[in-house]
Amino acid sequence: MRSVLKSDFLWKFVGGFALGALALVTLHPMEPARAATASQVAAAR
Image (cartoon, rainbow, N blue to C red; front, side, top):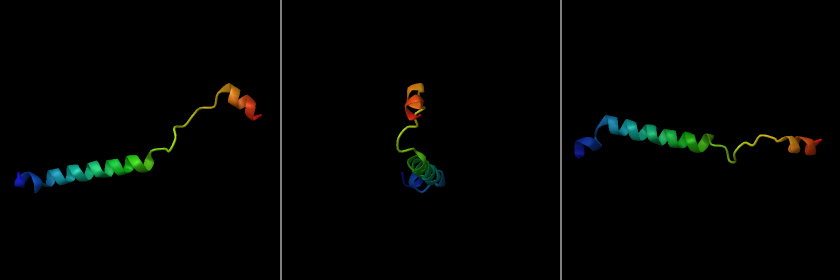
């Protein structure tokens, strides 16, 4: 078990997972983008 915790592969995997999670949280939009419907376009005029 100790050799697994000291392995370079494990720490690179955990670091990549943490970076991916951070990027997902950072780049995720706060609310989903919605396409304007024809009625919304007409109401905006």
